[in-house]
Length: 309
Image 1: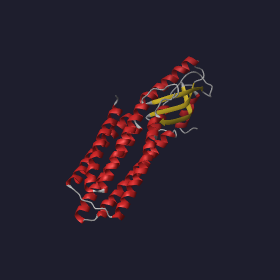
Image 2: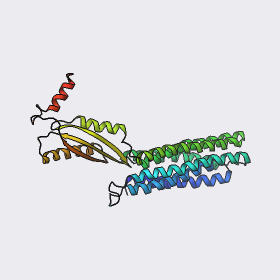
Image 3: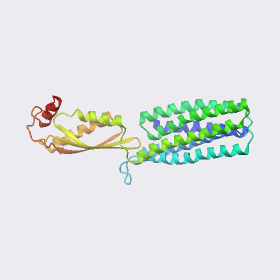
Image 4: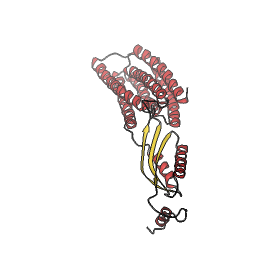
C-alpha cells in the first residue's frame, strides 16, 4: 500500500469518528448546526472512500482496454463526489429553513461545543496531511479531498459560533443561520472540486509553472537540436502527458537522431516526474555544415540575441 492509499484510509477513519460523534450529539440537543456539520463529516467519509477507490484504480498499469492507464479515475471520482455534495449542501439549507418556520426547540449540552472543537482540530490535521501527500504525489483526488477538509475548518468554526451565540441569546435563528452558512460552504467547496475534476476529464493543459519548466528545458537546446513546434500537454489524474515535434540536424543518420530524441525524453521525464513524453523527430529545415559553429539555427539565434534579425 503506497503513501496515497494510507493517507486516504487515515482520512476515512478520522471522518467516520467525527461524523458519528456529531450525529449523536446533534440528536441529543436538536442543533441543526451540529447535525449539518455531522452530515458534512459523513460526506467526508464518502469522499475519502471514493478517493481511495480512485487512487487504487489509477495506480493500475495500462491494459488492453485502457492503453493510456487509469489516471482519469481520480478525475471521475472528483466529479461524482461534487455532484453528490451539491445536493447535500442544498438539503442542509432546505432543512435549516424548514426548522426555522417550524420553530423546533434546541437544548445544548457541553458535548455540543466539545465535539465541534474536537472536529475543528481533527479537520485541520487531516487537511494538512492530505494536502502534503497530495502535493508530493501530485494526486488530484487527494488535493480535492484536502480542499474539502479545509472547508470543514470554516463550517466547524461556524457551528461553534452558532452554539455560543444561540446559548447566550436564546435565539434559535442563529443556529439555523449558521447551518445555512455550512450548506453554502459545502456548495462552494463542491463547485471547486467539480471544476478540478472536469478539467482533468477534458484533457486540460498542465499547470502553467510546469509548462514554463518544459519550455525552459527546450529553450536550452544546443546542436544538433534545431528547435521544436506543435507542443501539447494534458493531465490525467496525477499523470502528465506531453508531445511535440523536435527538429534535429538533417545530416544525422536515423540511429543518431533517435538517440538524441531519447536523450531529450529522458531529460524531461527526469526533471518533471510522472510525465509521459512522446517526441516526433523531424529534420532541420535548413541546410548547413555538420558543426555547432556553422549551424544555421545557431547563427539565427546569435543574430537575434545581438539584434541583427
